[in-house]
Length: 117
Image (cartoon, rainbow, N blue to C red; front, side):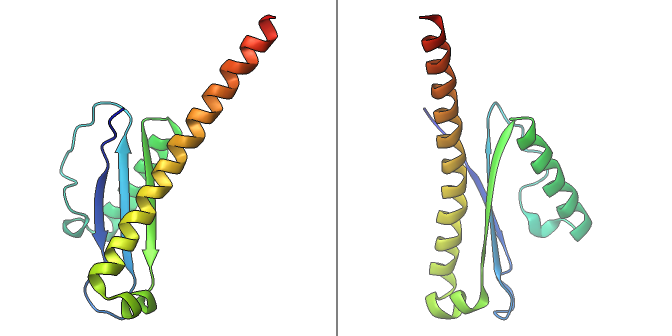
């Protein structure tokens, strides 16, 4: 099974601010519109997009995960390693959701099988 995950980060400007890393994995064929980089969107557009992402996940069309790397973690690890930590953690959230859904599906199939006997 192949999984596509799109990643974006924001907050690399002043080091006093945290780093935000988001990851999205489409469940079906996904058309990337003009959301190539969150930095080109206004704050309102980003908020609307996040609300849309949450709605699409509720409809089981995408999965998403995000992680906020604190400014103290950036100081401790450095910017590049902190960004890698954020990427890994946001992708782990998506993989955990995939795992939970498969376990749920397997359990439901098993329960149906047991009921038939």
